Every structure is written in C-alpha cells, then in structure tokens.
Amino acid sequence: MKSMSYVRAMSFLSVFVLFCGVSLASAEEGSSTSPSGIQERVEMRIENRQQRVEDVKEHLQEVKENVQERRTERQENRQERRDERAQRHADRLQNRFAFYEERLGNLMEKIQSRFEQMKSDGKDVSSAQAKLDDAKDALDQAKSFGDQAVAAFSAIDPEKYEEQREQALAARDLAMKARDQFKSANSLMKEAITLAREAVK
Image 1: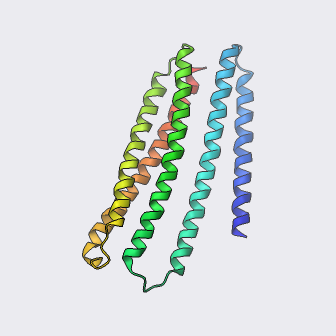
Image 2: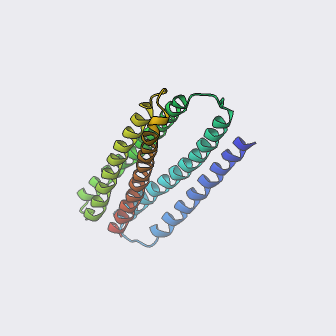
Image 3: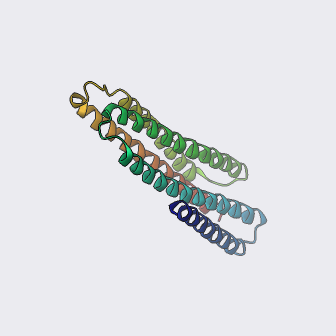
C-alpha cells in the first residue's frame, strides 16, 4: 500500500511540475518576437522543468529510503554489534552520496554545455557562470565530506566502540556536512539557471 502511495505521489507531482513548466514556457514564448530568443527561453524552461521533476523524484526517493532504513533498523537484532551497524550505515551513505554526486554532476555538465552555446550566441552569462562555478565547488566539498564520513564510519573498531564514541559522532557530523553541501550545490545550480534565463530575456 505504501509503495502504491509512493508511486501515485511521484506520478502526480511529476505531471504537475510538467504541466506548470510547459504552461510557463508557452506563456513566455508569446511574449518575445525574436525567434532565437523564443527558442533559448523555451529550452531553458524545459531544462528547468526537467530539474524540478528530478528534484521531486529525489525527494520521494529519499523519503522512501528513510522509511526503509527505519524499518530495517527496527528489525535488526538488538544484540548486534555496533560496529556492524556502523558499517552498514557507511554503505548506505556511500550509495546515497554516489547517487547525489552523479545526478548533480550530470546536470551541471548539461548546464555548462548550454552556457557555452549561449556564449557563442552572444549572450552574457557571466553571472550565471559564476554561480554555476560556486555550485561545482560546493559539489566538490560535498564529495570530500562524504568520503571522509564513509571512511570514519568504516574505521570504527568493534572491540573499542565505547572508546570511539567521539569518532562516531565526528563521522555523523561529517555526513551532515556532506548533506548540507549537496543541498547547497543544488540550490546554487538552480540560481545559475535562473540567471541564465534572465540573460535571454
């Protein structure tokens, strides 16, 4: 039942975002008399719409993963050694961070390619490019914190967990920093798209 609700929610949100994106692109298309300007604005709207759809999917996937994680943790044997839980947590973080890294990296490559084309067409995208560069830096920071967090969780000694409680807390903090940087990279990327859209008005 929960799985069906998840699918329905994702389908509804995807259709809603698609409808809003197409409607807005159509409205803006009628407001410009330049064929090249129309094409560029529509293309930017399509890219923005696709990103929104991906954001919705990512959010729903994260919710699903969190629910599954809590369910799995409740089913675990209470006598299980804490280092094993830490290792599984490290594995989950590694998979999740790899997903974020690949998704954001691919989107940034597409946006960078689009900016290069706009530059060739004589558009000033310097502000948008600067914001995209900031997003790339944030993504690099996220990768670094993520790698450190995974390594820290993996390094917890099963025989010395109590002595390594501080290390476990530090690993958790690194994971939170990685998560914050991934969010920052995503926000900066959206700002770059907004600035690029303004450049073609």
